Length: 232
Image 1 (tube, one colour):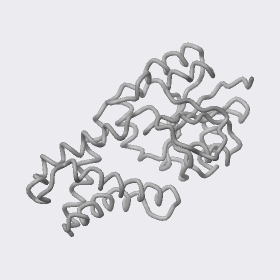
Image 2 (cartoon, one colour):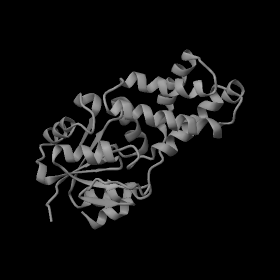
Image 3 (tube, helix red, strand yellow):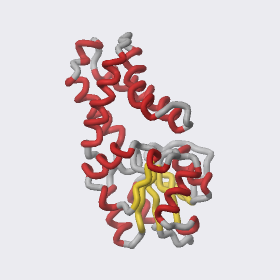
């Protein structure tokens, strides 16, 4: 069995429950901006539209087709357009407030702190590799109490690369002074985390919270963070 030393985690959707935190944040925005009256539709109709556009634009961002700034406001713009509201200033205001409130949320996946304690106690060196924005990700980490677990936090902004490109993984290993045989990537995203690790020649753990079907062959697959105890 490989003798791993450096464990590289993804943050959003792997440890930090992005969907639950985003939903809570958008619900607040709906009240702050009086969107029920402006859009004339309940939040429960707005939220699925937002998720749809957010997923498409994140995929385009991962592929280097749009900038981070475009992603931030256009997910709001496209959602508003679905309700026949072509209001770019409103979209930009929603985006700014969303990015202000979102990182203050603290909802984690079950067993997150327990598994990080377990791995730390076993003397693994923990790091993060994230495509999230530098300021936002650090705010999430500090507000949720996760910041102290990680020796290095590598963001796409700081590394000037994006998962699944191999360069961000190489940058992370270089920063951590880690070699490939002692490194493994742990994440939920099949393209960014699993294919990305493969691109870099790194072992991987697919955290399959949603029981997704894939043709990729990660080194390991778990459906719950507690199952990492069976690997490490």
